[in-house]
Image 1 (cartoon, rainbow, N blue to C red):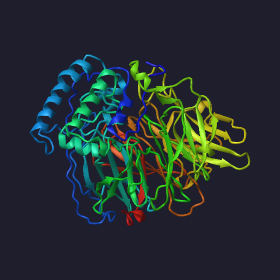
Image 2: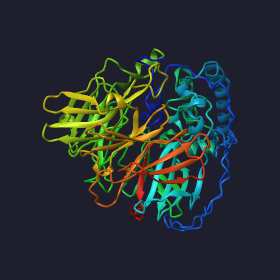
Image 3: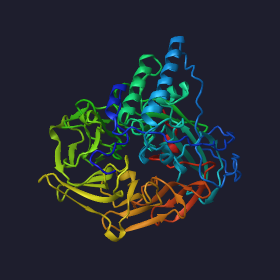
Image 4: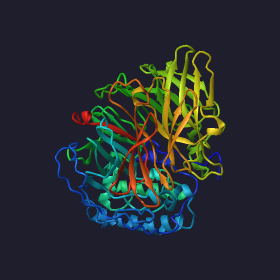
Length: 603
């Protein structure tokens, strides 16, 4: 159903349980049927080496997985544990049992099950096939490689994704799942793989309790049943059964390596520090607040300036002013003062951009209107009456008085790929994918999704803008998720590597786009093969070519259920190597690459 109040944003910022009130959506929902989720085969792998990247050159795999079954992918969930709880006293056990009874008898049976789920909250849709979760994987070494891994690739490719620990008890959106990091170690032509949950505070508490108890911001919080689930959460909090003050985020979206730390992020919390261990495994270190300096949530797409090595970020609030804050971190992790950016209403800001001298902030039409809850609707709406605009702020501005706003009508960019300054014209150029309808990711809409690669020009002198599609009408594709050469973030770039998001929400390949001419080269994965975000890894040497590097992409064959990491030459778009994964790798979100040189200095 397409309407002005139809969709929610992906990761609303939640810094405490009370902020969850902002996430109520219109319709009560129902988990229509219990789906059987047989477990995938467990894999035993040897862990014989003490060095992370000292991978054996033997061609014999060091792990022995059970054979892939030639059938649709199945989900691996943790079975609910006993309800005695983590160190609960007798009264707490009684309260837990009573609240569980209320949840089942009233919330589930009365408010949810009599009502059908929309596709965007139906777990049978959202986590079916290769969107289904998998179990953790200890390090597996000496993986089978077809072709030759380029010797210049020396480090760990890590990719984040949503992987719910427990089978959903109500509605579930793909973005609601617990964060899991997949790591592929590449060195000396050999490969190893591991995957682990990011053990957020939310994850640890639910694992200890043995069931999902934190409200799911997109899948569950709809109408009266959503209010009831919030009340259950507050009641459990008052009884000391859960503690939302320690964080409610899932850390499933972004990854960045900064200040000697790999940070896993979602915009409903502060980042989590994940360490790559000497054995090639992954472990969650802590919820990382930059030594007490970061006191609010941070979006999952901070920008690392390749020249200054500073990290720039935003934080938005859906409850109280200031609705938006901008800040940055020095290369050694010291945080700047917040710059409060005044907005008339809280706005969803999933991404932004930087240039050499500016940060570019999109203030677009997906907004939070809390009064809609009173009328039974969603507080997260597509405001058709609002004109989108982009704010351009000097990176080191003391306050928001230096912000220059430029209207950009009829433009909603979920992701921005790059931005730079044009000295000759005084314009700021922004490259993004304009998505219509803007709320289609989060709710059922009658219109088909379109994601159009667009060049936006902001004239800071006149305050006017222009924007146009980069591809010709004949070449038009849905392009979502990708990047430019990370050495050139904030500077003029010629190429972008972007996922071909067709058939939505799957990714059938990726495209190399010449941003100046609109020329496009495609790498198509093949029949029944789909992937995710293409990650462009530039060569470490000071090469002259912007496209001198390799594209890494995890790809899954839905017929055979086998997964591979493809390594494609970024210049000629030819396949260099394919690494067979020891187990199924679900479709996911964003990734990064940590070089072996950086691993030496890990915190």
